[in-house]
Structures are given as structure tokens and as C-alpha cells.
Amino acid sequence: MTGPAPAATSDDLLVHRDALVRASRHLHATGLVTGTSGNLSVRVGEVVLVTPSGVDYDALEPAGIAAVRLDGELLDRGASSPSSETPLHLGIYRTSDARAIVHTHAPWATALGLVRDDLPSVHYAILGLGGPLRVAPYATFGSQELADHVRTAMVDRKAALMRNHGAVASGGTLGEAVRNAEQVEWLARLWVQAAQASPGREPATLTDEQLQDVWRQVAAAGYQP
Ligand SMILES: [Zn+2]
Image (cartoon, rainbow, N blue to C red):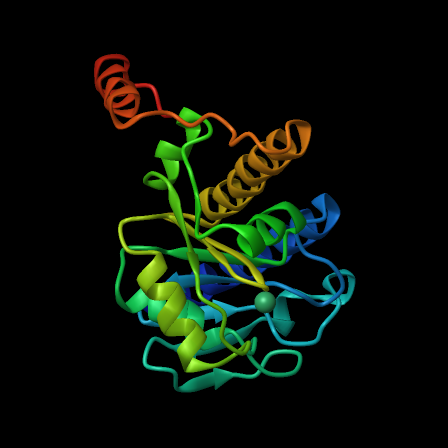
């Protein structure tokens, strides 16, 4: 018989590796990531499992998932090396209670980040992400500067947009992070399509008072926005 603690840890990591592969393929199928762009990670204790850089999602296998410690020390290269955006993932994990992170180059969110500094309250569902989202300033991909910009934009939020780059979403589970990434794209698409439908007129947004009413309704009904 094997000792329960090491076996559980190993099994746990395998489960998360499988889930990362499935989530990667799902996001690829929905178009939120294309080619080898975007990356996903899960935090398990002090270990962060992260998709490798430059590997097609179709070819990604559980054994190809890379692993680093929360302090950045490399544990497993996976199929190539940990994603170049690993510093971005680690920065969010070190400063929040996130347990999973999804970074995409989703087209509507990226488009909105080119023309605005925020994603405003176009729908009350944005409260599920913590409120209106910030657009992190541009910095070169993979840089600590970009990681710092995104970490700041994510304060008290479960998502942020990244100028001239994409979007990032977090969650308490990988499933939640994926749903949040999809929600960001849906909200961004609402704003952009509304702006396109009526050039010269700003899309309507909810007031602080209306958002407070939503919070009260959530508290009363136990309903998640
Ligand atoms: Zn990227």
C-alpha cells in the first residue's frame, strides 16, 4: 500500500492536469483561444500547473502540462516550457484567493480594450466578476511589467482586459475561471455591438444605485448574477 498523503497529492495533480487539457480544448472550440495563444493554470497548494508555451491545444496531453512553484521555481517543463505568461498567473495567485486563471486573446474583449479604459456595467451580470472591469495598460507579453499591470487591474475583480492583447479571468475552480472568461467575452461583445448599432451614442450602463439594488436582490434571493 502507498502512503495516503503522497498518493493523494499525485492523484490530485493528475486530476487537475486532465481538467486543464479539457478546459483548453473547450476554450479552443469556442474561439476564445486560437492556435497556441492563451494559457490556463490551476493552483494546488504551493504548486501551479500551467499550460506549456507553443503547443497546439489539439496536441496537448495531461503529461504536457508544466508545473512551477508559487515562487516561480520550475518543477516540470511539460511538453516544452511553462507558458511565457506564467509571471502573470503567479502574480494573481500571490495576491488573491484565486485557484484557477484563464488568459485568452478573445476578440470582443480585445477589441473593447483598444477603445476604452474599462468595461462598464452594461448588464447586471458584471457583478459576478466584482463590478466594472479595468483595462490593464499595454506591456510586452511575458514581461513582469505586464504581470504587474494585470495584477493591479484585477484587485477586487475576477477579470480584467489587457490593452492590445486580450483578457484574463480567475475563479475558485477551473470551471468558474472558464465561465468567467466566457462572461467577459459576452459582456464585451454586448458593449461593442451596442456601440456599433448606434454610432455617436454611448451604450446605456447601470447606475451605482441600480447595481446596489441588484446586490440587495442577490442577498434576498440567494441568486448569483
Ligand atoms: Zn497572451
